[in-house]
Length: 151
Image (cartoon, rainbow, N blue to C red; front, side, top):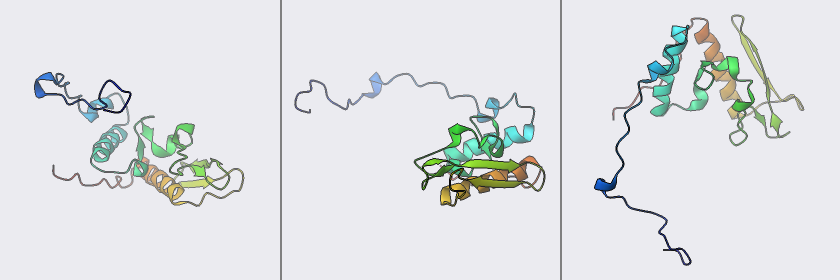
């Protein structure tokens, strides 16, 4: 125990004291059952599963929060990650703007509204995820999902 504290910081729970296990949530596919775009729903579910097994969330072609293709919501302030530099200009310390042209073949541009630059590894990941998202939306190759390792 830490001096001045009356309770331990860590409590060991005996198996008999363990809370009842919660039922497993319904499968990830059920989460997107209401989406009209079944291709999008299938890729969302597949990327959810792949992310649980190691897929970097920064390489997804879909957004599970907004339930859409990544390029469709990447401009949302929620997608600015200061710590990792995704959609962030460290030089100017401000969010990076995104311009996406959904017309095939599609183009994705990231730029800082102050200095005009957006060249960082994190922003290149954002650009690539948007390009993959655009291709998948237009029926191109399904995004490469990482093989889920055997447990």
